[in-house]
Amino acid sequence: MTPPALGSILLIGLRGTGKTTVGRLLAERLSLPFYDADVELEARGGKSIREIFAAEGEKHFRDLETEVLQDLLKKGPAVIAAGGGVVLRETNRQRLRATQKVIWLTADAETLWQRLQDDDSTWGRRPNLLAGGQAEIKELLRQRESLYRECATLIVDTTGRSPHEIVDDILAS
Image 1 (cartoon, helix red, strand yellow):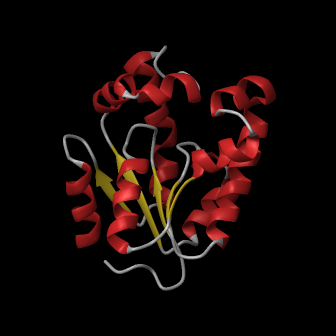
Image 2 (cartoon, rainbow, N blue to C red; image 1 turned 45 degrees about the horizontal axis):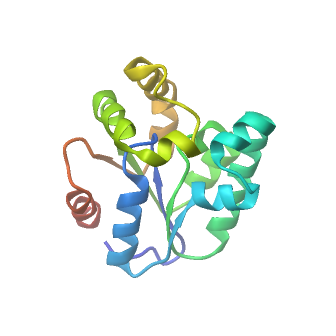
């Protein structure tokens, strides 16, 4: 796959699917800039995602998330790891659908559960998904699956695969 002539490559999916890791590798292979929307959002909000949720609520967080997506898409061709809930707003889904390449990274609930437990950044920076265990992850998957599917131009399962294998799969499509 060559970089899109007119736009960016967006990676969507739940937390733990590998958007940041795969995004960095993909950007490197395509010689494109990489942006992690969560990192950009935290910089703009001046706090961690967990702190934004706690202090200002989900609506404010989703407003920031929408602004960040819009701004990142204006930067020109890049690989962008979008936040896991970016698909919850119709305006964001419209922006995603207007993008040439939107890759939905998936994984089963057990894999996501294990990855989240192994990810130290999850504990301090993001709202707790671990308290509800695999049941909470399954519920989020159920709630968001149709929204991810609506926006995706490519679906890649990351379960049991290395980031390099996933990038190879994306580049071969």
